[in-house]
Image 1 (cartoon, rainbow, N blue to C red):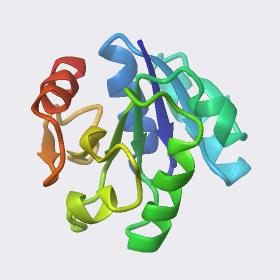
Image 2: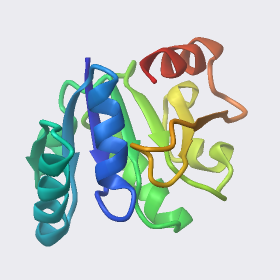
Image 3: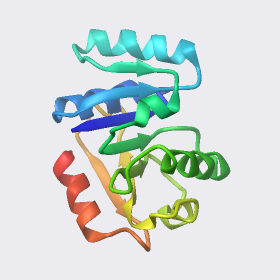
Image 4: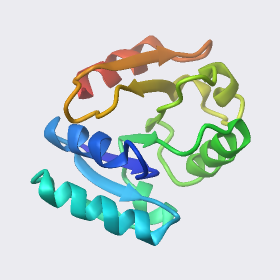
Amino acid sequence: MKGTLIGVGTMGAGIAATLSRGGLQVTCFDVNADQLRKAEGELRVLGVKAVFESDLARAVTGADLVVEAVPEQLELKKQLFAELEKHVSPKTILASNTSGIPITRLQQAVEHKGRVIGMHWSNPPHIIPMVEVIAGAHTGSSVTEQAKKIL
């Protein structure tokens, strides 16, 4: 399975490490090249292999799970989810690491609302093995169960 992490800032490397340790082939994407280089160094220290990509479409192509960890701005997250939907399969799970934005509000940005969930990670994610999986009003129960199995 392939997992893509969008946004490798504060929690990015830890989330990527956790996904990799869970058996996913991980691709990391960020609009900031410096952040990508920093995450690459952090993951190398953690002994984690990942692909680092600066092109969003290439980063998410073939992904089974996409986790976004971009800044806590509703419109930014909605724009990202709308863009992601153009490049992934309708079965790809789209997850947000939001700590305060209702998942149902993020589901408004996509056509396939049932595949959008929240995956709220504790910091640092690679040390604290707790992930809260949050369904929105439209999230399918099979999506929630599949996300839990990945973790």
